[in-house]
Length: 287
Image (cartoon, rainbow, N blue to C red; front, top):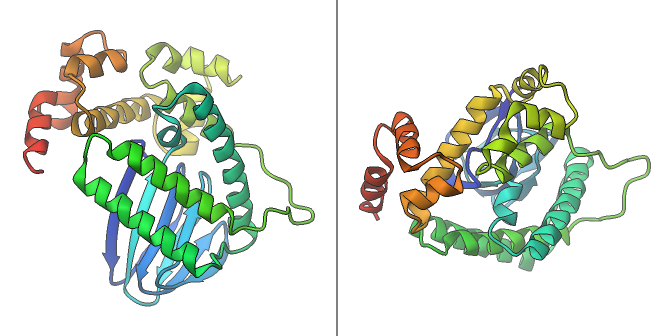
């Protein structure tokens, strides 16, 4: 089964398709998806459900999902990782939010697997639509506080979605333990600025897996090598800092554990074909 990764804490896009035929893939991230127009069929963990204009879905890491449209479909997709919702907060709040997110993940995993998630309240549907509109505005404006505001909007959406679910477990259904690959991916994202925690030997010890096998395991479950994933995630992280913060290149270098500013600049130039400062200057000139 093919898999899809997220190389930044959060991304948003709006797409319009005459014929939407998206093969079922396992995505290693959360996704809130709103159907803005059109109709068709969604496939989640081998279950088929119809979709129509205004429908809102939440997918969790390791859900296998795909779509087949009957009518031209326009949708908004908001994709984010656990790290996005738990970053830049005080430790107590971070731990509480992470615990809450894990509970929510389990609830939605079982609903996606065994039944369709339906938002019964018209008021809740409208509220979620308004929050998604706010997220789009924040994303387009790219202000210094955009990430903080978007975190709050997504948290509100998740709370509204969760209260529309029947939380009583179905007979015979057991909540699954979090897959090991999700734990490894979350560890990488949380420690992207700590190179020592990303070494193969450290990861193998942390997750009780052979250092000779962890690379093979990671590639089998994600479709790419461990080092390539870490490097690409780090470059995407630098992009986010350059676009949405006032951090200097030196501060970004320190945050991500580069030996110095020139080391970061060399790596980023290989990735984007230009220096970090030039990239920031050119991108910000567009807004």
